[in-house]
Image 1 (spheres, rainbow, N blue to C red):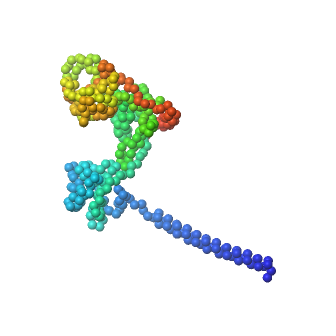
Image 2 (cartoon, rainbow, N blue to C red):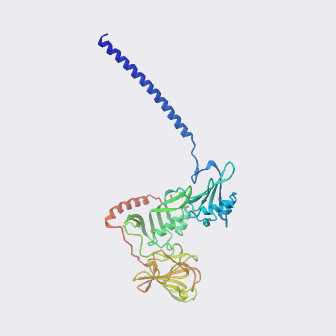
Length: 419
C-alpha cells in the first residue's frame, strides 16, 4: 500500500471519529437544554408565597383584629384559648424585650392558628405602624421584635393659601403633616399665624408607607414659599457632617429666634400702645402679641437663653421670662403650667417647651401673651430681624450652587395644580 493510500485512509478515519464525537456532544447539549427548560418551567410554576411578618399566610388560618378599650393582652389571648399558665410564662419571657403594659387600645393584632387543630401558633401585636411584637407559641414560648418594610415615595405639590397652610393641604388631599414639616423648616423666617390669602408654596418631599398606609413624612427635599411678596427657598446641604437648610444665597434658614413661640394658632391681638383691655375695660399699652390657642398647647422658647423668672405674676398669671443675650429678653404670660424640670436659672434651648397655653391672671380665655424686650425696651416681636446662623462656607459655595440650581429647576417644573 502506497503512502498516499495510507494517508487517505487515516484522513477518512479522523473525519468519521470527529463526526461521531460531534453527534454525541450535540445530543447531550440538547438533553441538557431540555432539562434546563424543564427546571425553569418547574420554578416558574411555583407560586409566590404570600407572607406577613415573615410567616407564610397560606399555612395558617389568620384572624385580624383591634385591641378593645380597657383590654389587656391576657384578655385578647384568653379569647383565643391561651391558658393563664402560658400567659404567665409569656410575661416572664417578655422581660427586656417588650413591656406588656404598653399594650394599647386601637392597635392592630394578627393571630395565626393551625389549620388542623385551630391552636394559636403565632400572635403578632403592632406596637407602632412600623414595629411589631411576634409571640411564638409553636414550640417553647418565644418573643421577638420585628420591623415592617417601609416604602418611600417622592411627592411634589403646589398650593395657594386660602385660610391656613393646614387647611390648604387638607383640601387638596395632601398629608397635613407636610404643614408641620414646613412650619418647622421655615420657623425662623415665616410667621405661619400671619399667612395671607394668595401666599403660595411648592414642596418636594418623601412620604413613607407601610403597605398602602402612610406612616409619616420622611424628608423635605426642597421647598419654595411666597409670603408677603417675598420668596423663601429651602435647599438642603451638608457641611461639617451636618445637613441643614439654606436659602438661595447660601444663608442658613435657622435664626437666633423663632418667628413665634407656638406652631399653629392665630394672632388675636397685636402690639399696641393703646388697646382696650378685655377685662379692665380701659385703654392701656399692650406691648406683646396675643396668640389664641387651645388650653394646654405647648409653648416653645424662641431662642437659647436662661430663665430669669418663673412664677405667678398678678395679672400676667403664670409667666416665664428668658434672657437670651445682653440685648434680648422674652416673656410668656397667662400659662396653664410650666415645662417639666424647669426653674429660675435653668438653661433652655431654642424650641424647648417652657410652658403650656392657659388663662391664668387677667384673661378672658386660653391664649398666650408673648413679649420681647430689646435693651429693656418693649419691641414688636413680629418686627424683629433675627440674625442668621452660619451660612454655607465660601469653599463649599460652588458645590452648594450646583445643588441649588438642580433643586430650583425641579421646583420650577411643578405646575400650579397639586400633583
